[in-house]
Length: 393
Length: 78
Image 1 (cartoon, rainbow over the protein chains, first blue to last red):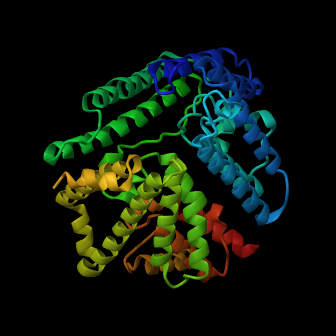
Image 2 (cartoon, one colour):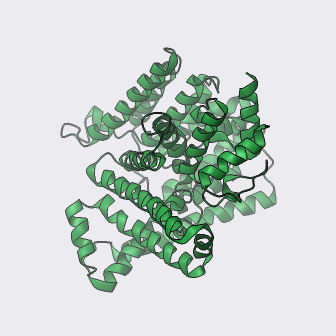
Image 3 (cartoon, each protein chain N blue to C red):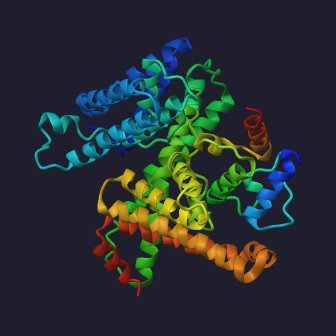
């Protein structure tokens, strides 16, 4: 079986993009070709076809839910319904009765479900809000289960997806080929070479202390970036080859000067999704009603709620909940620090304080180390993470 | 008073900056403190000023001050 994280798997994705390019004589067929390519991806990579069938079943449930019921209650009901499916599949994967050989073991884990889930909620809100027509079945399936964006996104919005789905494939000229292959090569170097070297050399067991531990934690954060952004480079490069460029997901995130900025440069499509479908509606609701005179408190609640959701979406367990909570608290701390600085320094002095390169460097370093340390909480128990961080002293 | 001066006054109050000047092409990126939290405060303050209501989707899709102004003008005529 080809591992989902192996270079062979990504080469297969690239090969599939070429095949789908050849099989797309006109836009009308593209949705069908995409759906078949996703099935082919499951077969060729050794993932169980039962798992693909499970994802199609979830999509089918969603397809019906898009058309059943009226008003806000229906949106809420279907959003809760799909969230329950998502949470149940996460827990069921870890259940003792789900063994590798059993039927459930074949269906679970529903590979790519976290992305299917967020894409679906976007569709649900937009369709039921009257801003979009429910997509036809094949286009809907191609959108929820795109073979090249199934495993780790990005979370493309349906209007952009549909536009590219129905556009004629541009000719594959020399410049596009060079750009695409350059992007794919970058991705393989980042993910398959640099990240792999870091992982195999350091192993990231965090058994060291003092400055060595500090370096290891920093390199772990860099490993995470290389691994994830390398994947995105491959996906974007492969997308260019079929005239279907997914949205960018990274913009030098470790050069952010605070956590708020970090989330506009790391996993950008996820940050945008959370802002539009969770932070904004929840904050509007609070600021219009209960907390109309306390906008900062409303923001505090919504930032923490949004980031805990973000953490639990990554993995529904205590560790990732704490990781999300830490990022929420980090954002809130930034906001309160900003408010305090404005009061102490005044607007003009705050502007020059922000413009100072010394402030910029210090803020960037603090942000980077906060992000790096937070990864420890995502992949260790709280006690283990605190013990590791204790080794820095 | 037309919509733009009233909008500018609301933005000055939200950002606590009497010198702030915005044009139709001003985006959130042009105003230092205009982040997602400030954006919600602006939307709610504009709702109170003009007696209108934005949906969450409308609040999210605003690209610049001009788009926001047009949205308010449209709502005022409805």
